[in-house]
Image 1 (spheres, rainbow, N blue to C red):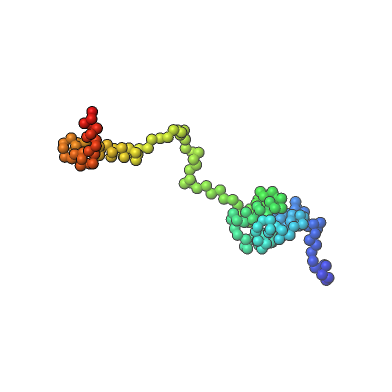
Image 2: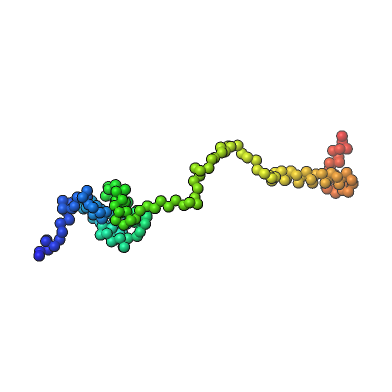
Length: 172
């Protein structure tokens, strides 16, 4: 055999028709060849490694990650080849059983299940005392205590260095 007979013809014309592809790997491979793209081109566009893309085309499912990661690889590969991603994912689920699981937790409750009451936009008063109220109360207590002490004669204005205040009242 000559070397030309051993090498398969991988030109666009000899590639199988994507519409006739009966599997995901056949569809991806045929479309890639029709568009004259290499695995390197697809790897650069999808940012997935060449070996993953080659394993996908070779149906080497054991070498590929499972679950949503595999679906993400297939979706991105299909988008780059301008294949409808849903078609590619459907073929994937038929071949591998890799389907999106509708795992809605029974413990989760939607916020749509509750009736919402309208909220007011006015500021609501906080409970308790504010700092300003506490300061005013302390000043008032100090003034009352000093007033009582002055009235009873326990202290004088001179004791508080407020002798000049007596002059105000004497002038009146």
